[in-house]
Length: 379
Image (cartoon, rainbow, N blue to C red; front, top):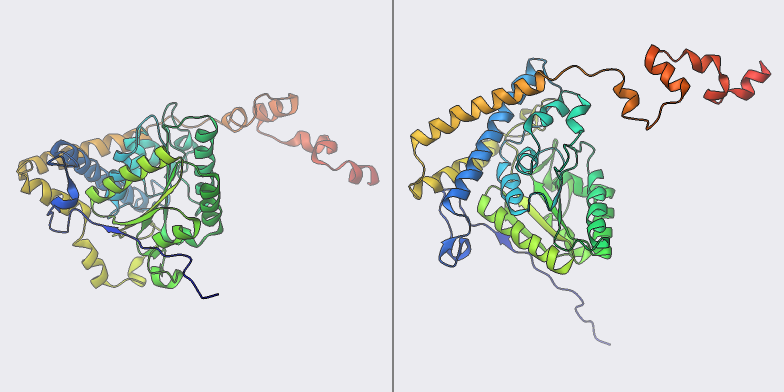
């Protein structure tokens, strides 16, 4: 029997808005109009700018000791804004990692919750009723399994108009949880978009050293999952790819994979110093591809943006962020009862005594409670 080819595949790359803010009309127009109206692009630009302003202030909060370690979103804003805009607020579920501030906010999460999370206040993870997002996930890759579960629940309940999107970095695709999630999503056929923000660095390890595949997108092929690579700094390409992916997920009750090629212009977190492993030339090359710069150039070419509007936005963004910080820092102090009432549905006598006294002396008085009965009898 002759040797035959059993599998062939190709992966498309999508860019609609280039670094100079020029729109590829063959890809970015539908029915004679841009796929995003001027008003929509202005809205997305404003969301990205406010997110960038929040990043800068959050960095200063950490450096001044007012907040813990923080991972900036700087340089990756188009991924969150474009994809978040393509998902349906109040219908779809967002399962973020830790660089999706804009996405979570667009879907209803107040920004001060994000600051509270990084301030170590657990109330930042208490998602308000009706906001369809899970809390920020710091462990690498574990949240993708939760995303599969949520999407599976939509399928089991027959909620066929709903979809889930989960975000992660290129480094997360080397984790076992990523492959477990991909396999479950594919074999169970659930409506889930896997969105990889490939920012070129898994902390200090470059893309080419932590994987041998030239693209991240091709990893989806092993799970027979449709996939595309997009310019992650192009809000048009991100929006279109996510919109089309969502349509596929809903219509076929099946997953989709998107790789957004982007770059983090800041350090991995405020605990990192990227100057130790990245060259100034590399950062400068990617800075020229900044999603905010190209989006503004596009708006200016459409004659709907001006220096005056820019100054107004910058002033408004500063005021908004000041209010966000005030809300986070002005929250009333937590009370010790929270450790009990948020953990247990009912408090027995011993737990109530601990809650009232903040002492665990009752454990020593009752060795059985601590599982020490045998040792107690032999003493």
